[in-house]
Length: 119
Image (tube, rainbow, N blue to C red):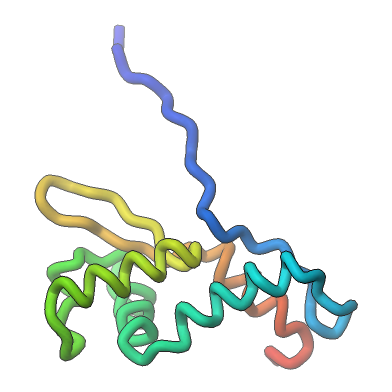
């Protein structure tokens, strides 16, 4: 018999919730959540890190594989934290390394928000 416990999944701080921009005006809360996601990608280093994770084989990347973006390790950690806070990445510690993966539902929601302009 296993002693394993099933742990509840934690929701990201920023959840996709918003309708396409062409459907109706966003509420103040929806606009704040959406802006946080786009703001996180508005920094070139964060965009490079996000791209490195998204394009990495298997859909996830060890921090050791994506830290060569021209800034120091503490700065990389700061930017990865901001991407996680925006709900764009999730992470999992395995031993001494942290592995990051893109949150596909959030990215899909960002495309959905843009609506017909995304085509």
